[in-house]
Image (cartoon, rainbow over all chains, first blue to last red; front, side, top):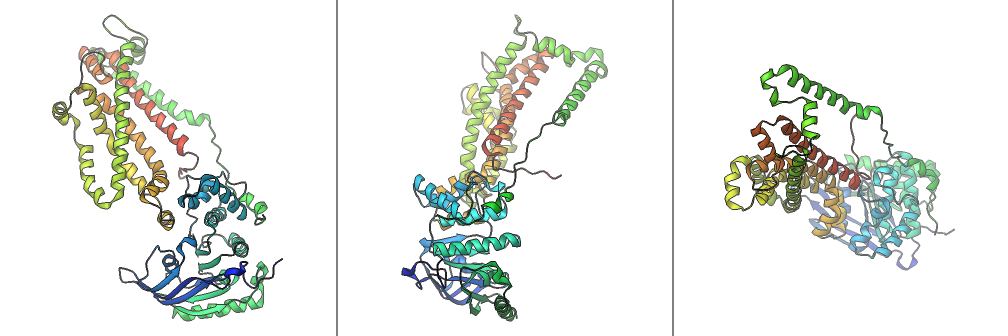
Length: 258
Length: 287
């Protein structure tokens, strides 16, 4: 189909920096230092994943990017209107059907009823939930809930997608399937991604770049460019080069723990 | 537009709705308890009570014959006056309940706005909840004219607490990530209340409604005892009259009908709750 080195299919903004952390530090009011002098940027066409031990402040990065928390040092620049945020849990409203849940963000942004209906239908199609519009979250499996959550963010066509360990609670098969789906969306929709996980395999499989974070206070201790071409096939996980990449990152992660 | 090819693979993930199965077992419980109740009643009024005291508790068939099956006699005995009184009390209960719901939910919304307001209000709500209404009657009489209004106020005082506490609990029950989703979209406090907190509170609100509705009926009956005026009196006042005149069958009939009113109200709100939130709200029970 396409010949692409990365997921970017919008040549006009390829390479443009969409999210930039510059010497960002974060100390919570109770004195806990979550982040220490973190600099990183996510450009158009990039899918950047941060891996690190639990509690190292990886999620705090996303919370700062989306303004849910304010950093205490450094600067974080991003166009906050073009952010999509995917939470650890699907965060669906149990009283809304899939259709109404997917419409929610558009609704909060004041889109007209017909407009948001149309956009929601499109997003529901994209995540493969057509036919389930009238189901309530309790009737869906964990994977389907996550798809609905993705669709909800897709509606506003964000330029940057922030994923906060979204698939951590899913079984491996569902997780790998959703990895593929997010990558397909990444290529088709052309958003830039910033992904948080503690699975090295997931990080390597998804990303153009993997950053390794140390334990608290979180610092970026290593950066790996992932050379594999998109679209990626799930068999990639069993290639020697893939394993080697994972090994290197695992090594860096162990180093970061000490 | 092409979509991710998952349709075939996720169909099996849909969790089927559990079929409601009704069986004889669903009715056997209440039926057995009812039989035991009637049995004990006969035992009490026919065997345990000494003969000269049996007028206090007529047997079930006497109650049915004299209380339920006599429509109306000259001295206003019979079922019809009981129904009239019951309707009078029901009106008071409904009026009081409507006010209770409006006032109680408004109070809960205000309390949910700030921790300070919540703390400032709680002790007085608990005080209202535990104050004996009997002791307040002179005050109520002094402040408000008209038996009808006085009775409605008694209903509100008795029924308001569960609505406030359950609504408040519900409004504060939305998950942190759900709140953050709204924060990320820059939602106003009002939007958050209407689109997040209120729907999240509905299951609790309905629990509060059911309790308050039952209490409203009790409040109306209690109010009847202390506040009455000429014309048709409430079922509580009627019970008092029967008690004074030692009309046992009417007395028991009136008490049963007051309970039936409470039961009807309770069932109505149970039905309303299922109709409103049954589709999405899951109740679970350990096996």
